[in-house]
Amino acid sequence: MNDAYLQFMPQSMHALTIVALLMVRMLVAFSMLPMFAAASVPVTVRTAFTAGLALCLLPVVISRVELQALTPGMLMMLTVKEAGIGAVLGLLGSLVFYSLQVAGSMIEMQSGLSMAALIDPNSGHESSLISSLFQQLFSILFIVTGGLLAYIGMLFESYSVWPLQTLVPAFDSARLATLIVSSFAGMLWLAIKIAVPFVVLLLLVELAVGFLSRMVPQANAFFLSLPLKVLLLGVLLLAFCTVLAGSPASVFNATTYFQDVLFKVRAVAGGT
Image (cartoon, rainbow, N blue to C red; front, side):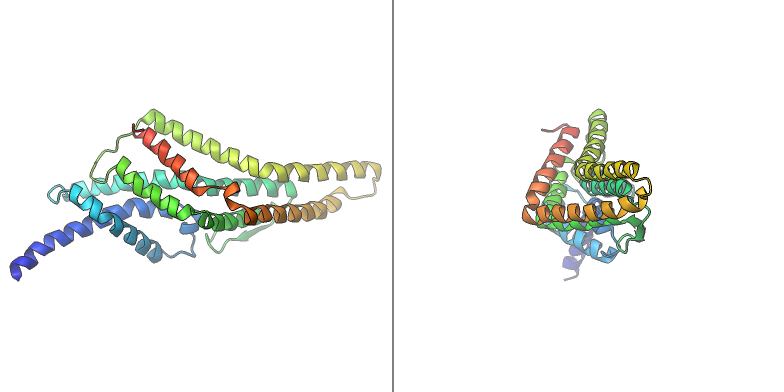
């Protein structure tokens, strides 16, 4: 019995070490998603969630990592490498959230609501009204369209691109720089596409009120335009929410998005 116990201890420590290493990449990646980084999702919940995902990968990975190779120095370098990969994947996966935040800021700037701000209870930071609304709407859309499952699938597939036991991940620095730049450009382009209908219609209201103030100098353009723009913004937001409720996949297809991210990551790693 003592011999069996002595044989079991190294194996259990080996498994726990691999689970901990698997958790690093996924914990960093999930922590960069606004819906998981919020204060409404405690760190213990995130840790338990990623631990469950790591246990699912353990049978596949444990046979590829030798126990003798896991020295303290090796563990430290693998932890840093996994955290870096998780940060890259988390950034690529969360850019669509931040594009909505940028779009909300554009809309508020044009509607005159940029002066109104609130403390977001999820993040604990000052946030704008429209940006917070868009973040909440997209978080629901993310779940409804299978975004969470697609994001988990992308993280799982990333271990075949950048294996856990590889100390230095293979990547093309030029392609990685291009990927980051193109991803930020895509974020700004998505923000512009979302904000343009709101901004254009609100701008037309301002032009109409400006023309009216020229015809009737006694009319106060500011006090006329602000309620009209807020009313129009409410109607536009209602129409936007109706489109989301009717066909969420037409606005954002999470599976296609994360498959595209994984394809780009494979290209950076030199794969196909």
